[in-house]
Length: 525
Image: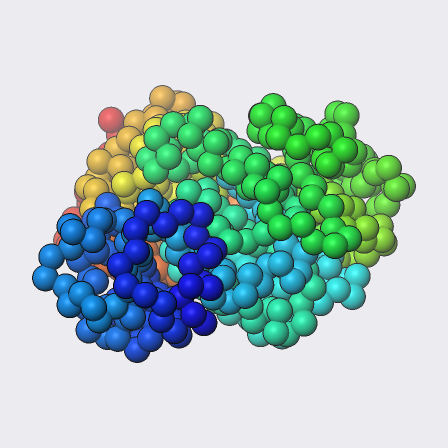
């Protein structure tokens, strides 16, 4: 593709040095540049992509896109490449990636799902409903991408994939004949322009609570970032026969400001209870399944699912609202929901023949942790206990640590605080913030509150404490395949660790903590 054609997608070009050239690819990593590529130099907190412009040119880049003025870039072989200066390199990467792939989202109905909790489950439900209706559909979540019969794992420490990969996936879907795609849209994905260049038709929200304040700075900024998905509906490419629609949760505080963005005739509203277009009646919660009646303007249908917990009813309502926006028959909604067996790392049972219930869940926010623990309580026997293993990530949203400690202290019988991606923070400091809050909820160190830094040992210890009728639940990692200590990602899977723990073993793939096992477990304060 010629640069002159590609650059028309950019909202603003501040300066250009050099002429039109043929572009053979778009990259934001100099190591991935091949001859004929366009390289976007993205300034970051730790690493500035402008430092790697010489490397990109050395690998054959013919176009450089950056934020610095040309005169500020010294010692470059000017004349060997064309330079475009833009105000926002991340935004430019989004538009250039979409343009290079021929704006694939304009050739299908595109559904975006955002929120603090429940996004992955809701995306999976929507995809299943579309398939039940015989629609050739694809999906991109933080767990996987589904393109036809091909399933691609995205389950490391990923948020929404970077713009070039998002557009590559969408282009593959178009090539496969996909007519509808569902995309999980995180706040990082919106703030970092990973979905810029995606023309959404339906935007759905699960809930917007407390998360990622380290990145966004304030609750207001977090809310504003999430709202971009809905604001962008007003300006996105209009496709024939598809109406722009916002799917909103009337029971969530986000309804207060998201409902002001589009006219009411472009909204479908759902709620677990109260006044809404879609609501749930006659709810029946069991340890192995959930039943309820989905009431809508198009009639009432019985829903049965193996997904457990009231929060999953809300996710199902969100998915059903998207289906109604697309005109999918009501029977296909019930069939699609019933076809979803489980979501990786979301209230996922680990069964090794134990006489208690073992679960792995992704809950890593206060709201999600409370939902998970309330659901775990419903799975215990009459005298059964909830035993929770969890931690909080380093370098992220310190404010939620005490809140999650209080929630664990309130809703669990035994609390075991451990590592969860401490990164470069001191792990003991993170654990202390959590355990201090749990102690304020009448938990006692060494009795029903424990501090075990090694996550594998913590999960094994939890299983050792369990007796018939209890629930052991490990929260925070879910589907993820690694854990970060310092700046290194070590292989890790809570589900594998749980299987080992049930048999009295410790999954040993994390950094050693030395001979300090006595210090790992609380003595009473």
